Amino acid sequence: MSAELMNGTELAREIVDRSAERARILVAETGVRPCLATVIVGDDPASVTYVAMKRRRCAKAGIESRLVSLPEATTTAELVAVIRGLSDDPSVHGILLQHPVPGHIDERAAFEAIAPAKDVDGVTMWSFAAMAFGQADGFVSCTPGGIMRLLDAYGVDPAGKRAVVVGRSPILGKPMGMLLLARDATVTYCHSRTVDLSAEIAGADILVAAVGRPEFIKGADIKPGAVVIDAGYNPGNVGDVDAEGARERAGLLTPVPGGVGPMTIALLLEQTVVAAERSAQR
Amino acid sequence: MSAELMNGTELAREIVDRSAERARILVAETGVRPCLATVIVGDDPASVTYVAMKRRRCAKAGIESRLVSLPEATTTAELVAVIRGLSDDPSVHGILLQHPVPGHIDERAAFEAIAPAKDVDGVTMWSFAAMAFGQADGFVSCTPGGIMRLLDAYGVDPAGKRAVVVGRSPILGKPMGMLLLARDATVTYCHSRTVDLSAEIAGADILVAAVGRPEFIKGADIKPGAVVIDAGYNPGNVGDVDAEGARERAGLLTPVPGGVGPMTIALLLEQTVVAAERSAQR
Image 1: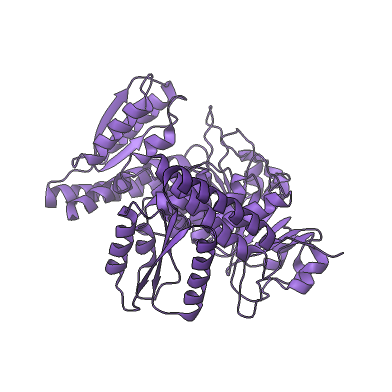
Image 2 (image 1 turned 180 degrees about the vertical axis):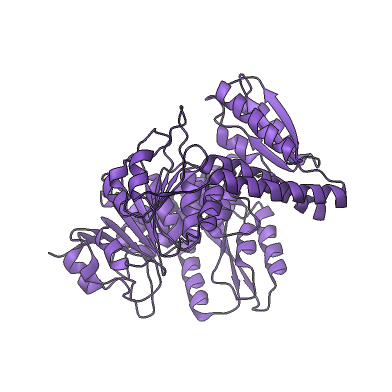
């Protein structure tokens, strides 16, 4: 048996193309061009590369991107003030704080300075609760949101399935579980303190690996025919799942790269356009 | 084997006594008396009884209680305006909206009118996310918060345990799972769409029943020695767990009544005092 690969690159392209078309229509009808403001603190090379890539994608989709680059020594108060300014700026529709931020900054305080209506990266507490409570006007955290779209595109209905989420970060594991729960999966959260992870994984119809440790999930643990979502992205294009082993057992599998990664950016762009559309309607 | 019963009545009394002492000190030192405002819409007999009981408990603990009783025909906008008024009133420290509210009211909109600093019942989206993200300044949803205190009092450390929460309501099941996850349990959410509930229950070291269906959880499904928390409270003092069957298999079990119920009110009173203390410090 060999798993079918879930083509995130192709699905992401469709979403970005549709978003670009919506952006074009919005400009034509209202003169409003969607604008995503990205805030980056310090000059971590990986973050700089990632931000540059997002800006190129924005440009291609007809989304204006504004970059606010702050020095490494920026304080929490300074960062919060900058983000509040963007929250109050009517020409900005979406705000992305590139994370991780330097260790001396209170990342949560910075996230919370993002107005919920502009939280197109889905990182605020309000957005998290909106995902958990199924509030339609909230934005989803982009990676979990992108994963839900991949499941839909491949005809995977989570209802009644046993879904296991490995990882519990505020922007990935926790919202992932809440989105799956909202779609009626029986959801289990596993993490570093889980005692028998292999047994939990073996029971998963849908497995989402979101731990950030290369090849942490062993192929032999995967339930035959399971849907395996690898949300890890470790140096050298290595995911959190032992891809070779998973390919032999899974029914559906996201490749790394080309699975979850492109979907994350596609959701970010799409949600920026939605935020701009909503702002134009007000 | 016969399960040890977890005495919520006794633990709740200790918490209420300590809260009363803190309230007394607060009045003596600052002149501020903790005040809980309760809003009730309509005249559902069970709600009226429950509210009256909470008011008596407040009085005993030296907490002022203010009752806002609104007619059944109250609109969402009217209710939101009343709650916003209480949120802005500096003499009110805690706000409780008695639920359920009549069906024509948008309960979520009403909850969200409660200022987070006064959300002593832990029902707002902000409070939910605070529980999920371990934010120390948030108030917990009272029933799940009371359950965590019961676990602590009986020496049950959730870390590494398999915890199964049956039910996923915004004020009970969902925050319950998040609080257990924050304490490092491996958490599974089960609900009406779960396919093999018996198998999920059989794997639970800690089981929380929060479905609101009398004796829904069968004793025979319970893992021998498990900690069984019955958060159900159905007519006739019947819980969500088959108590007789559970007593034979569980290690620890909350009785109904006298288990979770008193803890819920104790947490409400304690959090009202904490809110008043914080307000006096500002």
